[in-house]
Image (cartoon, rainbow over all chains, first blue to last red; front, side, top):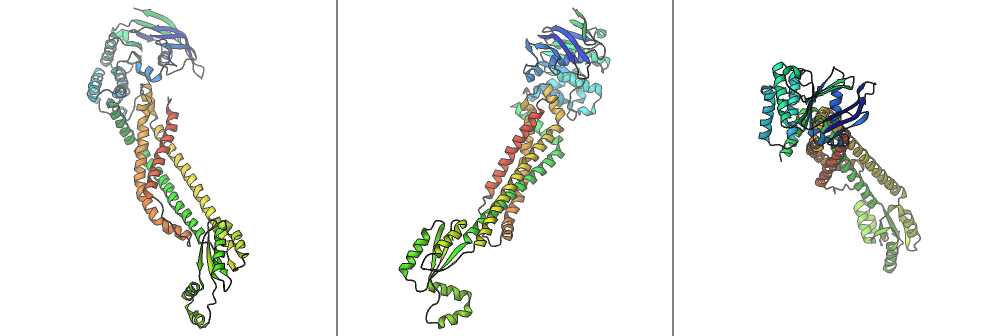
Length: 218
Length: 292
């Protein structure tokens, strides 16, 4: 489904974020990316989604180079929740979470039900009509996760989704992600909490200084 | 169906969030529309009125005394046939006397006391092209039945120059106002897009298509144009009412024409404004398509 072939990413300041990475993800995978801060996890996720262009190598999605793939379609198929949140601060939580359903033309009632459901999962149901700018960073992160989960994309990329969440909320979010995975969504997630919570990923990839240093598949 | 409603909702939300920019845009567009409309209304009237001065430039021909009607008819036919002559009006000695006594009633007694009317036949020659006036006047002078020809070349040349200057000023100001208008529209659209750059970035990142992302901005520009046009209607109506007086004060001897179709002018301004706004928006949007 997703294949990285000899992918390297060197930023203009000379930082090597990814160094000849070769990886393959199949449909329905639940893979954890583990590594220290600055190891290249976020860059790897962004490269998969076509948000960052590799300096070398290529990323294939459904056997097509992501850079040549229809960008709108690719972004609809690959959902994300990154640390830079990408929310519209002066809109309500409801507006932000419902956006992916709005441009798909889903009806009012269905949108309302789905948003309510997703916000309940991330424990933000009571803040549905608050402006995003009035929320804390952790709450904003949950809004971002709710938006990524709401339209059930084919692939879900999550960058440290539980980093700023309390244990109960983190567990609820991860359970929801696991339920999505069981329904067929491929999940690639960078985190180091998962194992502590007892969830069992289908694969763990260890990354250090942009290189893949270990792969474990269940 | 739902998509259209969501797009309209986004349009309203963006409009609500960009109130200040919307007000500035409306004002800029209003200034542009009023400048464009005023220039068109006053410029057209000024140009049409300056053209009316042309008709006031004529050649006056005084024939020799005791001219018989056969010679008069033949001379008039000759003058009428000259290239550049539009129309010839003959004044008989009796008509001339009547007009003279109307203007100078104090000389009526003297004229009546004479045995014979001393005024000759005369003709007023209207020209289709005042630049040919000198040549026509020379041809008429050479006719044997003609005594005196009066043609003020200086006045004709001045009027001709005035028309050229008015035309040049009119066209230059129109072009300058058009350029300012397009510049304003494009800048305000860019300002609007730049202000909501984060929305565009977020929408693009989560997979919104170009229509969903950018149509609200185009709709806003159209709405702001309509709003400006509605206000400009009242201002331009005042300008239209005052314009005849302004033109008359600039060219006092001209006949001020009122041939402007005000509704059509307003429609053209709206059409032009919306068209240039859409072009301006699309140029601006093309810069924001791949915003990161």
